[in-house]
Amino acid sequence: MIRIAAVGDIHMGPESKGSLRPSFETLPDCADVLLLAGDLTRHGTPEEARVVAREIEGLAVPVVAVLGNHDHHADLADEVAAVLRDAGVRVLEGQATVVGNGDARIGVAGTKGFGGGFVGRCAGEFGEPIMKEFVRYSRRRADTLRASLQELEGQDCDVRIALTHFSPVPDTLAGEPPEIYPFLGSYLLAEAIDTAGADLAVHGHAHLGTEHGMTSGGVKVRNVAQPVIGRAFHVYHLAGPERATAGPPDDRAG
Image 1 (cartoon, rainbow, N blue to C red):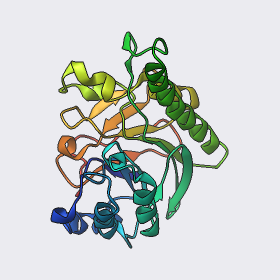
Image 2: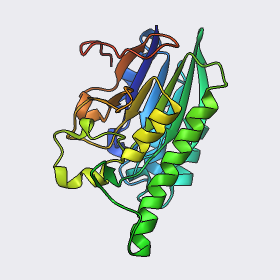
Image 3: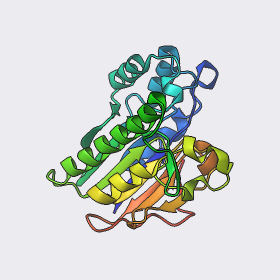
């Protein structure tokens, strides 16, 4: 049994220093990896990133992250990522990594993703250049997710996980105003996941959304935004190299 701890949208700043560390220090007892699904800071400053770094530095489990839109707000995303990497976090944007904890080999493909909406109600690559670039940017993010998941196929992973900030499906947005769905995710991410294959997809971003969803290809999707899961992290159990089985609703830690 492989144990995946995940949380997103922790939105840390100087005032929240130390608030998650006690829970994170319990991770070795219940999880093999910690996934951070973006929006780790409030305004995307290196100062805020250093607060996050102190929460996770030296943990006895690997930590893998993607950035979110808040982490890009100050146009210092590279600096934010560098602070986190210095603390030992594997920060992904269109890349894949394999982490091990004991006998488990966990492959994670990550991208922030982007918006655009979902089948039947999505933006099209048509019209003004800025609209076309909006859709192309979302497509590029999805293309890198597909490529990185495919890269993991040859790396002898027990499980493959798609880690994004934006949602790949509308299911996990239930509770959010429908008018803003196009800014919360894109069907292109789900297409990438279903094309390349994954055992679990994890995202954040939708604070008023719902935890459970699924792609049309049958991949389980989990919204781990902290306001949704209501705790420091949630743990999911994956049953080896076969199709993943998420832990029951009360199978929580942190």
